[in-house]
Image (cartoon, rainbow, N blue to C red; front, top):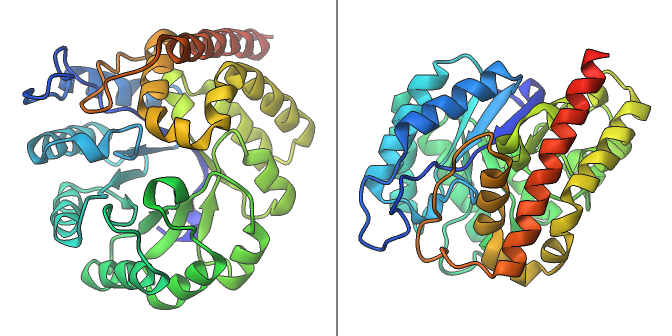
Length: 324
C-alpha cells in the first residue's frame, strides 16, 4: 500500500469482550463469534477498510494471548476482501517487534503503530523508532498513530519530514486535526497519506481536496453508513452533500462534546465513551471494558448513550434518504 491507495471509509472497531472481561484475573477475553459477525457486517454494509487495535480496540490492555487470538480471527474473517490495518503499539520496541512479526505472518495489509509508551520520545527517538521498524519490516506498510495526547509527542512537521526521508514503509497517518496539514503534505512530498476522522474530514477536504480520499471512524462500529456516505460525497466532490452529512454527524456527536472538549478528561475515558455509545447503538456487542479502565461516571455514560441513540437515528434518516 502507498499513500494513494487509501480510499473510502476505514472502520475502527472495538475488540469484543466476553462477559467477565472486566475482572483483573480474566483470561481468553475475546468474543470471537461477535468479532466475526461484526467484521462481516461492516464489509457487507460498505466499509472500504478496517483498522483494529488502537485505543478503542484496547490494544494497551490485551494479553499477548488475546492479541494473537483477535488478530488471527480478524485476519481470517477479512480474508483479503478489504485492506486490514492492525495495531501493534506496545510499551517497548521488543514487544512491538513480536506483534509486527505475528500480524504480518497472519496476512495483515498494514500496521497502525504508535510510539512505545512509557518515557516520552524525543524527536530523534521517534524518527529512529519508525526508521528501525521500516528497516526490520520493509514490506509492511505503516500507518503512524499520531495521537499526541496518548504518546506525549506532538508529531511536528519536522518529524513527518524526517520520517518521509528515513522510514520508507511509513505511508499513512491516523490524524485527528488539520493543524499544519498543508505544511506536512508539502514537507513529505505527498508520500504520506494523512487520514482524518469523519468528524474533521470536511476540514481536511477544504485544505487539501486532492489528498482527502479516505477517513477513519470509530462511529462505524455503530453502523458505517453515515461516515461512508460522507467520504463518498467528498470523493465525488459533492461539497454540499458532504457539508450536510458533516453537520448531521456533528449533531449525532453533540452529546459527547463536553467530554471531548476536556482533553485530559477524555484521555481517561476514551475507551469507555466508545464502548458505551457502541453498545447503545446495538450494531455490535462490544462487551465490558478491560481493566483498569472499567470505571465510568454515570453522567458521562448517559451522554455517551445519547450519542449512540442519535447515531441510530442518523442511520435511519440516511436509510430513508437513500430509499427515496
